Amino acid sequence: MKDDELLAELKKATARDPERARSPRWERLAKGDADADERRALDEIARADGDDDAVAALAPPSDEYRARVLDAVMRAKTPDNVRRFPMGSVVAVVAGLAMAAAVALYVGRPRSVGDDLPAYALTVGGSELDVRGAPAPSAAPARLGPDARLRLVVRPERQVAGPLEVHLFIARDGNVTPWSAPYDLSSAGVVQISGPATMLIEGPNGPREIVVAVGRPGSVPATAAELARAPSSAKYVVFRAAVEIIGRP
Amino acid sequence: MADDLKTTLEHALAGDAASTSALVRELLPVVQVRVYRSLVARSRAARGRDVRQEIEDIAQEVLCRLFIDDARVLRSWDAARGLSIRNFVGLVAEREAGHVMRSGRRSPWTHDPVDSDELARVGGTTEGADGALASRDVFDAIWERLKEQLSPRGCELFQWLVVDERSVEDVCEAFAMQPDAVYAWRSRMLKRVREIAAQLDADSSSGRAAPPATPLRPNEAP
Image (cartoon, rainbow over all chains, first blue to last red; front, top):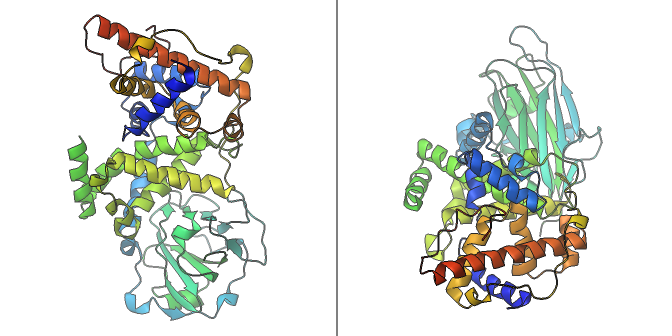
């Protein structure tokens, strides 16, 4: 049988296999179920394919990572559980998107005493920005096309001990509503929101204002209206970032 | 196990936190592997980043996507359509990773081309074991064994070259490989297929049932 005929028959065999796309041995590796012999065997297979990084890349994740994923999933599943704003107060008029400087880097500097928060900085990356970088301040909003990914990070200048809570809002046409984007709050006090813009921000093209408040439990203003007026304090920081949704049909 | 996972899924969708945790634990490895494969198949567009970090970032996003909006995506899985829940989730992971890479803004890593000097170019027909290549069952058995011996990169190369019948030029562009390296990979894969076929043929001739697919190790003699 010629090579081409052999490959054609193999292709038909894959079409008959509903699980053809799975790689159970590699899934066992990623799950932590592969023993040393199996890991060696997989490493040999990978290296023969010029894939020297595979075993390291698919090593079982840390318990911390697993916990972080589960936490993010739980928040995605039940977003209302982490938005503590009374429903009656979630719609408020903000003094327009112009109230927030449309820049990609903000710094809040509350006093730092006792359990007071240190200075925080917000970086926003979007379609025209390096999502891994710390973009320079700009007067323009982050423009997010159909394939854009948004990454928003609120990071303290030093590690924050103790409990924190995060409140998210999004404003459009002057209306502020809770924003159900899944976020990650690390043990160091870093808040991160990341994902496809189409998943994180619903609705038509146009400008939005994202409001992120991080603070000690109970200290963050309880309503969107209060947040709209609030400067950062020693117990909480409030950031506002302008984005613009473009290119949606 | 499949039934166990289905039960876990049902309980998770009903709101049980422990089942959600168990489900995430079961699905995370599936997602990680599929994300990695998607990144491998876009090596050219993915340079200079930490692949492990990319896998973890995207895997978390995939799992959140499954559960967001009252688990709308997970609830759309229908066993009657033929995909296992793991495979369904794998497809979601592939789409998500593809979305990330097509956007062109994240560049996880690059992959050095295979050294073509140490590899041979394939050509024509190779010898051996044709007697075992006669039936659909045999090819199914060959495929079962072959896929156990493919790396994530090998799986993607097989998909591109054999299943999708993409050109070598396309593969070179996506995988950041030289043509000789692609031909050499194809040659090795074909050689392995014939080794598997020969083993199946020998098993058949001796009256033994074909052994299960998993025991074969790389470079194991047929």
